Length: 223
View 1: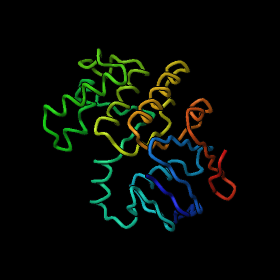
View 2: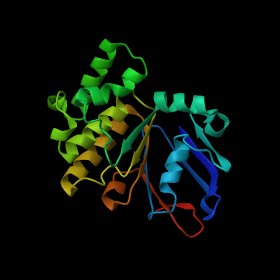
View 3: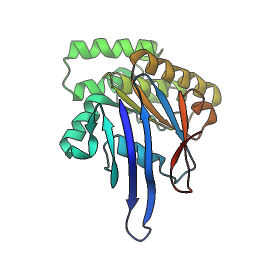
View 4: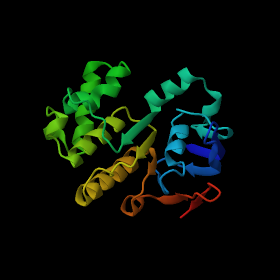
């Protein structure tokens, strides 16, 4: 599903530096891979490259056999819209929209017919256990409920790749474990590939494989 082959990325300017050097890993369908590492070693940069928000200086990122670096900006944007789901630490729910409208938003933007969008939204809210909160607004939700809504939004368009950036960073321990179990269950059930960036050992334990991004040499190795 996802192949990262010898990816190198550096930035120029006053603080010119290598961020990633010859990073390689593969993620199969239905597989959840965790990437750990200290702040500043390039975890977010790697996620941006996988999402096609940036392109590597060297190496290739292949998603479903497509070289992201060979696609233009418009093609990468469409790929993100149609095939990639994002789960963020800060939830990023729109406060003026109900849970239903927040979750349905990717389908609305993709032009999915309203009846189908409503059906898929209701199904995914039920799958993540917050169907009863469908008409609530984000300000009334707990942290765990907000993250469930964010996961539902990431899943509603049935992405083939899920990217999760510190998805439990704003949650208490109990809520974090519930959300992690939910995330793993949904990845397995839907056969999606998932890359999880985290500082948390508890979060990494739900993964099928764990990698550590190291400052020395800026390489990825199996943990």
